[in-house]
Length: 460
Image (cartoon, rainbow, N blue to C red; front, side, top):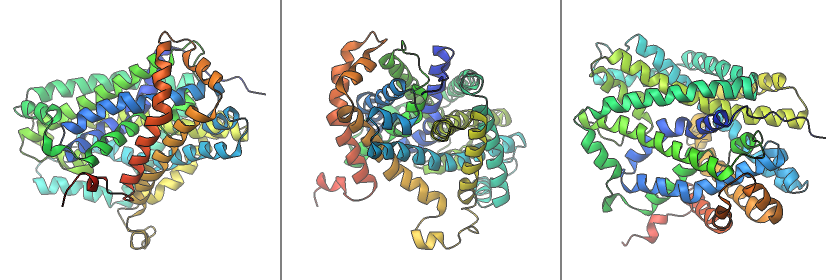
């Protein structure tokens, strides 16, 4: 017999919480550096197109599963598949993927909190470019510092989830998300006053033939899935807290628009600064922590701008980590019949312990032979495994499950209930059954280097 399920107090609270999960570090940390590495232009336009055409249908599928089952990912797959043990494993795959991603997300989140604190102390003052860049290397290689900020961020995340859906997640999402938008718009306006703003617009939105390749196409598709948090069980869990009269297509469309808007605002905030001061956009994952402090140090009001920016990253990271931890807590409550408090405490402790090797990867003292054996340090290994295998695999299995495995009558009834857009059902199902699985297979093949897609388009 089902226990009484918590539900969102308001639709606005649900939208802000789900938007926070989808936006997350992907929009502010990952999207700008991916756009830079892929030459902007075509990558950005393809990302927008794929978000609507492929990512959005899988997004709606997970919300449909959650609302119908009123369960987290493990029991949602199990009950909707009539107690199938095989599909139950897919639910566990989503939970394991969430657990691993949360562990290293917390490390990145700790860096952002550390940089906000460092900005208050003007750590860049009186330092040369090389010295400011090297600060990140020092932070990355400092075991005590990384563990300390990891612990602080874990306490923040666990404390919010400990409070429950309404008093914890929804309450803080209603505070953090508006604050995020206000800070982001303020920094965007500031960037628009810089001389590099025009060049940034051209870089981001102007397609160039040389920037288009099969890899660029697949990277844009992968970014669309990453940005919307599909395949993690987050949307199934959040969907389980929805009311029966909530409009799934409308909700998904609003969140997709917010996700795209924040991603573009982040890029339009960062790239004008880069072009104004003569840096290259292909700075990779170090774009925020290495390059931007150098640029902030050259701007008027550096202390305020730098601190506010990294607080923005903290807010964004927190909306991501609380959604990921909620998946683990909801699963523990349902599977082991634990209370929310017990689940939140034990899940937080388990994630913190598993995150320690990632936090200590830079120092090279924990599992010192790991990199020699696996070719990457602990942090990089699990970042690769989740991004190249777990997340795409979970996404394709979810699309196949909703498109082919569950009852057609139940699927249609749940999708259109409470919605004014019933006509969306047919194209949604077509994409879910055929287009989305094929697209995700291509992501897996390309990212795992099993197939070099570019070779099919290039002549020797």
